[in-house]
Length: 387
Image (cartoon, rainbow, N blue to C red; front, side, top):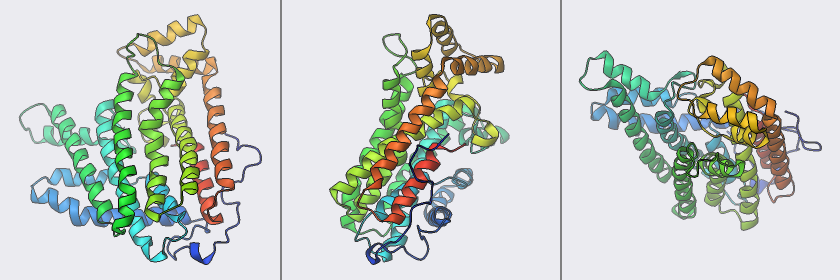
């Protein structure tokens, strides 16, 4: 995907932070390696919390398999949501560098919230792979089957994964509360945190219902984007940024910019996700190929294809989306039909427009150059990603 004309390449903005915004020695946003440094710090904070709090609670209840599944499941995340929370916090002019460790712990709590969402999402989607490994419900089912335990192994696996997700939701809130951020900062953040969790669950409900519209007609592209905005865009980018900014006590104008940036990048992120589901390779994405198509979901690219298709192509799309079982030839036909409508090109243009909008919003924002560069890096990373 080409970068919008006149926009900076990632890392091209000069970083000259004033002393009030000075980067802490561990995560220097002016360095090219800032994202790795932050991801490593988030994983260290998460690993410590899981080892000190989550695993002992599970093992004390003799749920050793759950402890093992949780530890493996949390390994290898990209930490997008913690990164956006931390960058939102760094937008605060008066956030003392001494609070950086607390901000990282607060950011890391979103990895547990993300685990909750993924564990239950994989059950809902009957997914086989997550990050290139068997999903948690399949791992639990295999454990149950291998011990010859009574009852349905598949049902056990799904139930266990849902319950582990529930625990991750509880632990995420505990980790944020115990992060070391001041009570006044947490008080500003909780309403946005609650809104994020509610939007996530409502978005998941919307994801279920768009597959079978009440009026019998496929949902519009606008309706699909509205669901994606709640389920993924707000949860991935907008709310983490707002939570971080609220923790830092950012002024209203900065919060407004971050919200607009988050909407644009979050939508572009989900649009890219839909294209990756259609065109991506499991070896790269770590997820089954065309998983949304197999589930009969009206993603943005499917909705765009339906809007652009002629009458004959629409009939074929409706037949495929309603098919109970799709083999590899069916999936190949799906891809060819969608591409032929021009839907892929349309979605790529939509991504470019949102990337350009996000970069324009932060160009004149009251944030330091190093934070602006980091936000530009993240916008590009979210829209040009391959997995």
